[in-house]
Image (cartoon, rainbow, N blue to C red; front, side, top):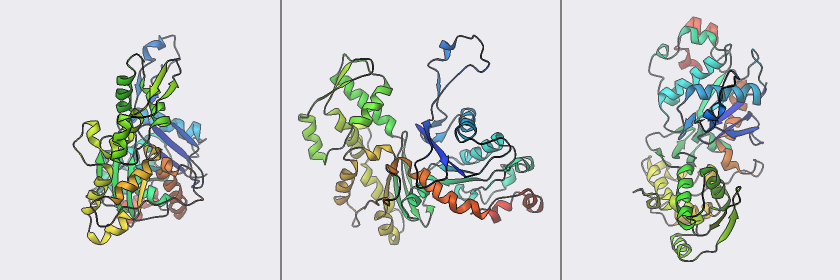
Length: 391
């Protein structure tokens, strides 16, 4: 059975067999709706608008909901059979708490009863502590499926054929900037910003509300408008011109209301380069990238800046890449950031699935090497066996 790769984001979960030359087989909303379990005649209207977000700003917050979602993905979506499970690679967002790393492993322990497991403990700094504090003997004896957990920044670089560089990942709930050297994230230099695509959607809703006061907008409609119309101006001067004069387009909403969209579409992209639009006292995204890399040893600056990878759906916004390049040419660094283009043979819209595709590439390499912990290993060495068997 082909290894499964799972990349659970705040908005979308990407999953599928490890096939790097294809887009993930499943791309589904992470948000779930609460349902009545016993099928009784209980009034479902009470649950109609009750939604559950297992992942909030890139971090798993509701473990029960995540277990249900993962069970659906593996056993229904990917066709796993009980007792005949395969191997799983999970992507791990930047700066997640250590408890989440351990929690993902325990989630698999709960979900799958007969497995082997591969734990990349050192990525979370747990290699210097007693593993028995986190995994009991009963846990280890219960496992049969190999599980690999790798940070998204590393995988996004693998997707474009790099092991060193810097990723700028604009997700639904966060922005991560992570320098990576020889496959290792430089955590001290990395930065996470608690804003993302969802905040840009709210910004667009506010702007559209001002120019269309009689139109009732819901957030799902605004999300679709953002995906269809939002764009970046060529530079700050061009943005200022759009605020004074801009072509107006009309869009008919699903309920028949007609909305006018003009300068608002440029405000969404500009907020990434002028965070003050969002009410934040912070530098734009290119300057943040340069500042992150400046904290790394100077001998690595060129290698990192000249191998910059953009990730996340927001980076595919019309004009974003050109604006990023122009801002990079004007930045204060002696070495200018340069974007890495994905290979031509990779799937289209690579930035949408870069961590998943990188995970598929890695799964093809690592799992056949059979680097897992067996019951015999555990009986002989105990929990410390992970230091010998893991990366």
